Length: 391
Image 1 (cartoon, rainbow, N blue to C red):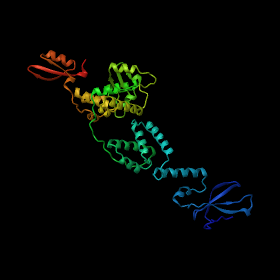
Image 2: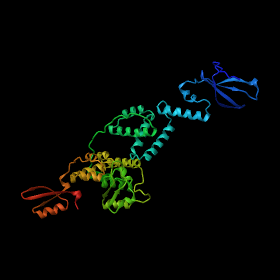
Image 3: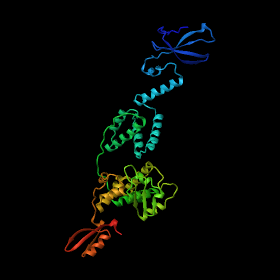
C-alpha cells in the first residue's frame, strides 16, 4: 500500500519510528515535502480499521526541528538526547536563563573545577556568587559585563570579578571578550602597633587571638596562616610550606609569646586553624566592631586581616631600609609587589633608644647590638635603635 501525506498528498514519505499505543505498536511517518508527522494504524490485521491521524504539526524545516529531522527513524532516546543538546546550546548562548537549581549545581561544579585546575584564589567563587545574587545570567557574557560595570566596586574588585568569570567561561567553553579594568594604586592603611595589640586583646576566642598574633609576627597572607599545620612549627620557627599564588615558601622566627599561645590551643586537627576564610573574616569583623566601640577608636574599623601584613612590611622597611629583606619576609616573587608596602609612617622620638660613643670601640659595640649611626657632633657620635628591636 502506498502511503500519502494527508496534508499535501506527497508520496515522499519516510518512516519515523514506532508509536506505542494502548492497542499496540503503530508505525510513524514523516513527509519530506511539507514536514508533517503522522501515523497509519492497522490493528488486528483489518484493512477496514486503517486510517490516518495527525501526530505532530511542527514544520519539518523549522529551526527547532532542523536538528531532529536530519536523521529519520531515530529512536526516542536519541531524539531526547538531541533535544537536550539543543537546549544546552541555546542556554549557553544566553537565550534561556537557567533556573536556580541549575545555577546552584553550576556553582558547585565551579568550586570543584577551581580546585582541580589549581586555582588558589578563593575569592573567585565568592565573586561568582555575588554576581548571581545580583541577577546575572552566567551563560550570557554580555550580561555579565553589564552587571560588573554597574557595581559600585573599585576597579581592582571588578578586575578580580572578570578573572573569576573568565575561569567560569573556560569551564563551560564559553567564548567571550573580557573587559579591561586596571587596579588602582592606593597606599595601604598603616595602624599603630598598639592598635593591632588592642584588636588581639579584644578577641574572646583564644584561637582567634592566636591567629591575629600569627599574622602580626609572620606577616603572612591570611590564607597562608589558615593553611599552617602543627608540623610547620618547630621551636620558634614557623615554616610557610603552602603559600598563596605569587608567594614563595619561607621560614620566619617568632616570639616565645606566640609559641605559648599556639601550645595552648587544642590539637584536634592537622591544621592549627581548622576553619574557613569566610568564617575567620566574619569573626574578625565582630571583634573589630566591638573593639572600636569599646575603645572609641574609629581607626580600628580601617584594619583588615591583610593590614597586619602591610604594617609588618612598612615597619621592617622603615627600620632596616632593606627592600630585599622585606621581599623575603613577605614571600613575594616579584619585587614590584613589595614596593607598595614600603610607605613611611611618622614615628615619635620616644620610639627610639639613643646612645653616644666617643671612641671607635664604643661605636663597634653599639653597632653589634642594633644601633644605627646618625651623626657626629663635637667629636661625639650619635646612635639610635628602634625600641621594638631592643633586647
